[in-house]
Image (cartoon, one colour):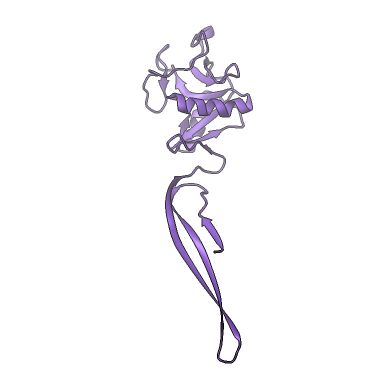
Length: 184
C-alpha cells in the first residue's frame, strides 16, 4: 500500500471521491533467470464526501450548514458594504440564531474590530429587518445593554463587537467600518 488521496476543495460545491491508491510491485523469475518488475496501480473508492467549499479568502464553519463568511480588511459605509457583498453574490452577514452569532463573535474577537451586519431599521425607525428577507428580528437578539437607542437620531445600521464583546449596537450607516459578507 502506497498512499491515500483526498481531492482537496478549492472553491465551489461538489461531490468528492475519497480514493486509495495501491501499488503492487512483483518480481518474477523469467525463463532466462532475470527478474522482471510488474507495477499495478489500482484505485479503490472507499467513500464519498459531499462538500461545500468556500472561495479563497472566505471562512467556513462546518457546523453552519455550508455558509461561508468573508471578514473584510477595509472600512466602508453600511451601504457600500452591502453592495460589496452583493458583488460576491452574497449579503451582509445575518446572525439570525445563536450558532451563527457565536461563530461570528469568535472570529471578530480575534481582530478586535467592529463589523457591519445585515440588519437595519432604515425602512421604519425601531423595526430592525434582516436585509435578505426583510423580516424583523424575532427570537434571537444580542444587543448591548441600552441598544438599539438611535443616538442622535441617526443610528439605523447594526454592527457587532461594539464593546469588543461581540454584542450588537446600532450605528450611523455613514460610519466607515469593517463588514462581514455571507454566502451559501
